[in-house]
Image 1 (cartoon, rainbow, N blue to C red):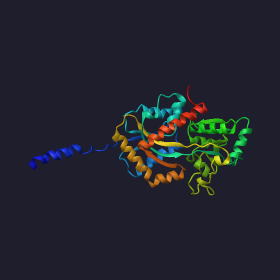
Image 2 (cartoon, helix red, strand yellow):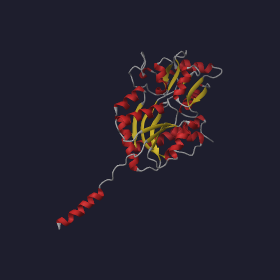
Image 3 (tube, rainbow, N blue to C red):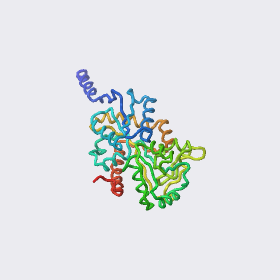
Length: 327
């Protein structure tokens, strides 16, 4: 009797064994919906390097820039790639803002959320030779300027543009907002003296700050940045005062997240969640956060989805106030 039961038990155990975990079988594309040189591009290439160094997948990682139409080209590419587990997109709050501003038939729920890697701050940058030393100086100059002061940023009706609108509302003055295809281009234009300021992320003006071409006035945040290692000979990220502390009451941070196309399997999603969790735990990633003054804030699963729902509501309100919603 007992030996007859053995094959039955063995078969039952075999059928209950979990299926092999999914793994990529061809090169993985990370789509960046902006030009090379911006903060999104820098993050994607940093992740690419970490994945390859630590051999977190056997497949090569390819970063592809698709900046057309304010990032809409890249976003639509992922939407149309439903079911393809070999594509990813790194995106920011534009995942809400671009569809809101353009009536693009797309929503973040068309994608598969993988992980939020960090949140990013914005800084009011000026040319190193600018007479403006504080946000107060800059606000006074803006009130008197005719024609309006030029401020550069990435894309139209996106994060940078939203911050400039908030500044106008706070100051009671108008700016001439100049949209560029990336923060790298906005930094180049500022260092060349073609605009009076920009609202770049820390990473986007880091090289020009170190090189003495641009200078931070204040960070659009409630608290100063935490990183105290010197970036230039005399200053660290933590030395940059908040705009609020200088009378410019504007605060804004944006997500930096990874998404897959929709209609992928749970196993495919789990592979990338696991991979990006490992990326977030590496020393290289922690060094990248510190170097670029990013706010470390890894989330996946329900924590990420809850954040996305709340952030979408917040941006719908902000976009409506700014008059950026498509009609």
